[in-house]
Amino acid sequence: MRHLSFKTKSANEKIVERKWYVVDATNMTLGRMTSRIASVLRGKHRPYYTPHFDCGDYVIVINSGKVVLTGNKLADKDYITYSGHPGGQKHESAEELIVRRPNVMIERAVKGMLPKNRLGRAMQSKLFVYEGAEHPHKAQKPETLKF
Image 1 (cartoon, rainbow, N blue to C red):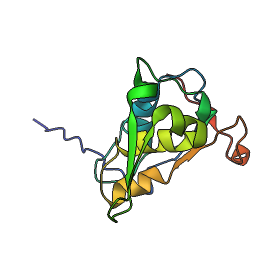
Image 2: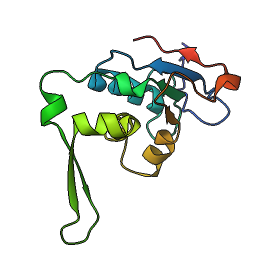
Image 3: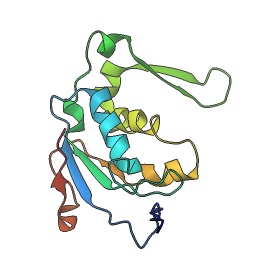
């Protein structure tokens, strides 16, 4: 009797085809949207997902200022930065941050969902967030990411 053996394919540069996706953040919940984006950046939607290899796609987020936070998060959620110097800790509410720098809110949410190593930093570099509806990546012909 012949034994059939199936080999598990491990992702590498030859196998991986990177696509470009665009996400319109208008009226989308921050956490639900960013968890899906993090999954696409990691490549978990692929059949050949490999945890130790960056097999994810590129993601472009437009209209970042129109993202929605549920409940009282706009007033209650704090973003803290610390310079390392005495008295160098700064607090900013989500309401203030979304007016001043809306891109940072999405970037920080996605960063927290990626691995904390050089692989995670490589995945994070494939995320592009823009405040308006325009982006400079039209040549890559991005597809709309459906949720």
